[in-house]
Image (cartoon, rainbow, N blue to C red; front, side, top):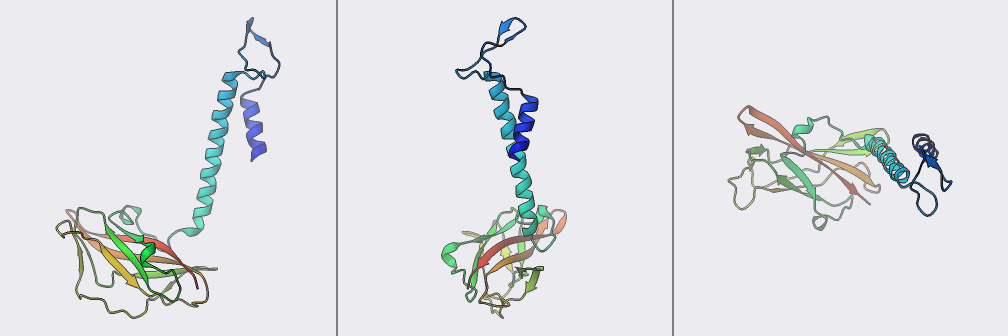
Length: 200
């Protein structure tokens, strides 16, 4: 990549190094080592542009393998509700429970069942596989209502114990919750997704 930068830069902006070179009968401005200032500025701009493009390409290729396991409309995922990992609430051990903050970010009322429509996935060599949570009794019973009318806050806490295939291994755990949002156009499905790394 560095060789490509040098080739493209030198092709676009030739770098004169001989002090005193003239152009159309007028001396060209050089710095103390003989590099024209305008050429230097254009070279730096071009290098930064090429570096930026290479960084974008790298980030796209690296994130391609970490896509969420469920294809869900981006306009309704992590927009109206969001799952936050709070370090103080977790040990991040494969044998312990996981606690996540469910953040309410909408002006519309959102309803979730008591189990949050929770879906769990672990990433393995062949890709994502879905797992279950340990049987859990959640109280109080009834739906969870997220609304601006809730005082002081409509945020909630999602806790669960994942049934991991092998608690002696490290896992990247994908967590989904889903709810129904009331809008003037009817009910819209909304979701939140986050990954949590668990260690033995």
